[in-house]
Length: 116
Image (cartoon, rainbow, N blue to C red; front, side):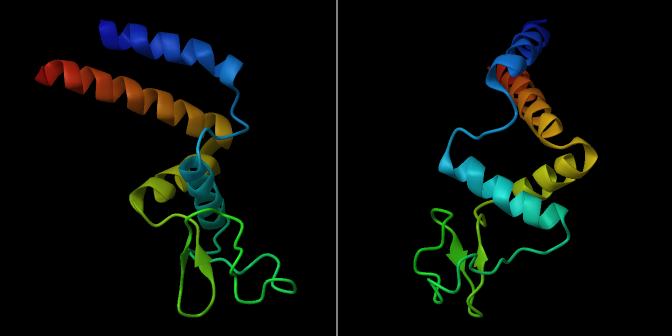
């Protein structure tokens, strides 16, 4: 019952938060990685401003990992996370990504309650 109430409360907050921006640098990196994956362009991306930063010293996504070929992966900490977000983006865009986060939070709360 509590899990359902939490799910309803979080879902009711979605219109106030909005699905158009992220809360942390990691979320932005995940979204950049997931967009790249959802578009079928793989894990690595080129330096977006190679003409002024050819070696990628100032790659614009914080804490990205560089590959040997000079390209970058914005988020490699937990590879399954951007894959799941990419699938959600393909299904319904950012609203589905936000809803996925809400449902995952409610499931985690119910599971924690079951183990307590």
